[in-house]
Image (spheres, rainbow, N blue to C red):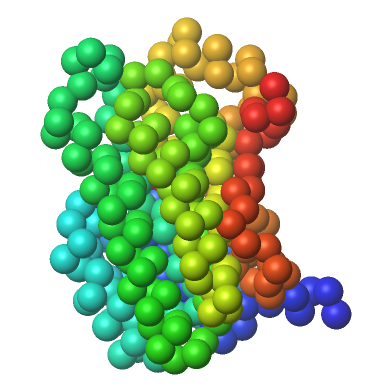
Length: 253
Ligand code: NAP
């Protein structure tokens, strides 16, 4: 049955940054496909927990600030203790700083690169090591961006990080695909979340962006549901190193 290809019953996914926004949307869609959720957040994810548990699956909250790699061993240890390890890692937590490149500070550079790229890499490394040690297949979904393909404006550290995410997705696929680990990315377009609040509040930028989206609307967290379940499930077993744009057609323009 084709629906079995997308079934995640009995699987466990680590989802970073899922108290809100796209991470919350993906945690709920994976839970809806039968997957237990390990929610990695620096703030309470109570709302996500309620919605996840409503699907009849298990939820484990792990407190972690991913500006540092220090919590990574604990995330993996808690996942191991509760679920015997994870099958899926969604590297979603991310942050952004906006300022003209001529004024951009080193702090704004480090704040973004540390979460969006450094912690993403080392969490993936820890997850992959666990999969390989246990000879268990794995799925890694890295959250990229339109700025994995384009330059953007006033977001130098974000563009560097998301371009890096695409490169690392390909590198990880090259190194780990033979171990039964699929590494792919989802590249969301312009989605209505905290991340884009400043853009949506700026009438000029908002109109400029909306006018360029063929679908004629901002995306929502629910728009990532199908892509997340696809890349987390057996349906994508021969998909490696790919970046799946979910962008209402933005990149086609
Ligand atoms: P969001 O609502 O701001 O969510 C970002 C998530 O990452 C939140 O859960 C946030 O936690 C978490 N996070 C940030 N810094 C963290 C840290 N140091 N430690 C742990 N968690 C941290 O924005 P979003 O749009 O859903 O973003 C999710 C991902 O999609 C990000 O990687 C973003 O770059 C990417 N993305 C978004 C768009 C878009 O248009 N919205 C487009 C392309 C890519 P807090 O709530 O505690 O801050």
